[in-house]
Image 1 (cartoon, rainbow, N blue to C red):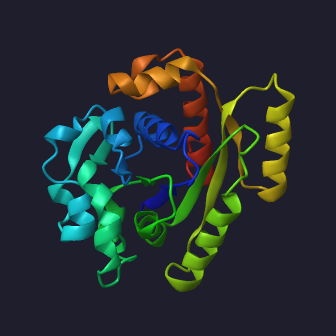
Image 2: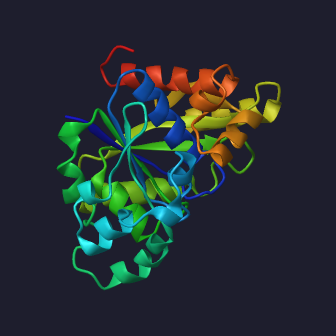
Image 3: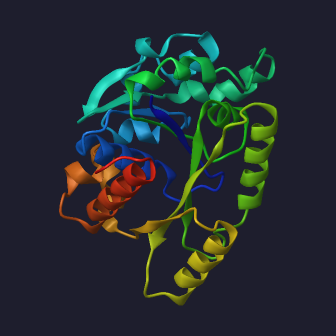
Length: 257
């Protein structure tokens, strides 16, 4: 039985999508079967895995709003051992449509539960907000992975995310937990970086990954070529970091990399 992990932080620009697609690709390359769900209306995880958003006929919008089965939207083998449920701009209107719908925060849960047995890991790339789309992801997931940028405002708004997680746990998904907190855009030469890391560890004891993701130009360039970093520049420090993270995630979930 696989694990559903929502990658979430309502603060934008923290490396959320970068982490989702590159971690998925590294886990796939290490032999795990992975499903990537693009649940952000911007569709960056879709394009970052080389799929043209304009060509998508059935997307996560149709699963969420139309009740379409995930298999109808599935793009198989976007990279080794990785399948994709893609997104296009249609999802941008879902927040408004969900307001009037019955069980509006539970619409993703049932379709994903059917898929758990087919994958080792299922990642949901959430939008940078705490609206109904993100609530559907939190209700459907087992755990939440939180990327945090190593900058001054890193913890700003994080208490709101944690309050939302606690509310979801109380009302909809009693099993939800924090998978881990990932420090991104890390630069060990800066005192500020170390201060932010210490502060995050104080707030999340035993939940901060040992692996940190460096600030790296190649990581920023890879999405424009529609390729995860391991297929764009295998020797880069971004590749090394995400492989280390993938091995850490596997180990934390009782496996051997």
